[in-house]
Length: 192
Image (cartoon, rainbow, N blue to C red):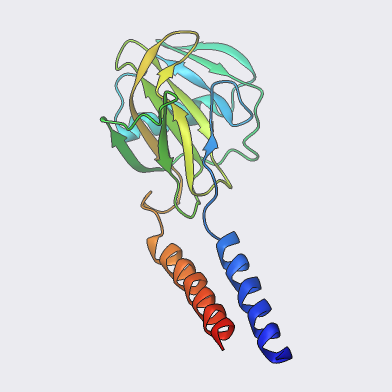
């Protein structure tokens, strides 16, 4: 009898441990938060190479507003550590799913990305740059906004040597299978 209880407790502990490894709620990125490195206007043209250049121009600037050529860069006080150079990785165009609170999801997968750009309202708005170093899984970004305006999100881009933005479904399925297996073992021992 003692052995059954011990196996049951071990199975429950394993199930909780596995479930704790599953993804948690999405991290919200907003304008002016600790991840917000700043923005630039106008955001056009917006090819991946040009967006890399805009980020790499913004990063070393001191906090405040800077006009460089025809572009205005606004750098926040948020840190990006050593601020490695931006390297384009992936891009998502419209349509975006509204989470019901005027945010949309960006999947960082297992991480490894450095920067996330949200480009707002095509040629009329601007682009916001967030530092996503160390973040994994789903983050949310605003569908509307930028500098007190109500500009709509036209696309987002990820930069850095991370994955391809596709969720790591294999790990999630493995963890879920292990949890269900542990619960099945616990049920088997309880029926004896």
